[in-house]
Image (cartoon, rainbow over all chains, first blue to last red; front, side):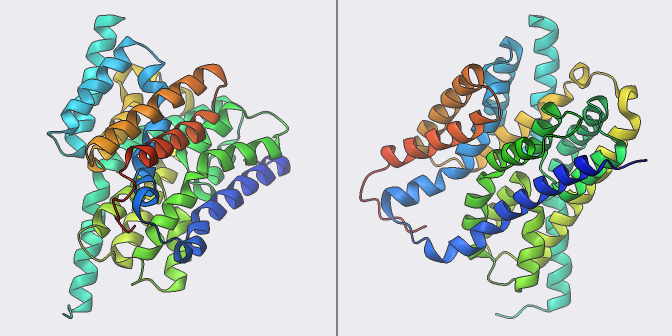
Length: 100
Length: 237
């Protein structure tokens, strides 16, 4: 069990940067009074970020992943979150076996 | 309307645990994978555990493990982390006005474990009722502990875990995100946002590579939503 000082410094730097991003919004929040298009853009932040994180997996990995993502999206319109996840995982296993 | 504080605390905490449970099930294999990959890239198990405890951000940790070398490139790791986690600034700005029931300590401590999943659930909660510290902090603590335990087990188990692709466990991550996106659906504007973000993110990922796809894709989706919305919709955020 050893903690390399350089590695520990890197981890602490990552932690400090991350904590700063997490609390930055607390200081910004009072100054953001959004309406119209700006409000619409702000409301789009959650889906936009979530999509950007998974887009490489969904669109640039393989046919099985892309198809499974569409199956999962279809499931998401009908099922609660856990059901959606189960459908997603099962469909990717089947599609990978089928499409290689 | 005044609720009995103790009963309210328990039911709020219970709701928090109930809501986060499916995400715990989804994060568990991801945490195992994160720990196992970290050790395979040359991090000591203690370093993997320290990273999960202190950084607590899956996407940033996977990216860091991907670019990890010995000695650790501190500036590169910090910059990659900043880029991937910049979304937290917008997330906390959106959630902070809904934390009126929190003390400053609860807010600054609670936001230390703000992640995509518990943030999304808190936003959903806040859209129908007041967001309580009991709900948010219990959910955050449980989710944090799950991530730390899972990545610790992954780091110890390491090579024994095998290929997570075999069980489709790696797809739990995008599946959770797709489910969360559905929860934010608001019709045409959301559809345009999703298409713009997905195409730009995948394009940047293929041409430039990670971690730029997250910031570029997110920005494209936000701009698309701005352009797609009627100029005078007058919704106050």
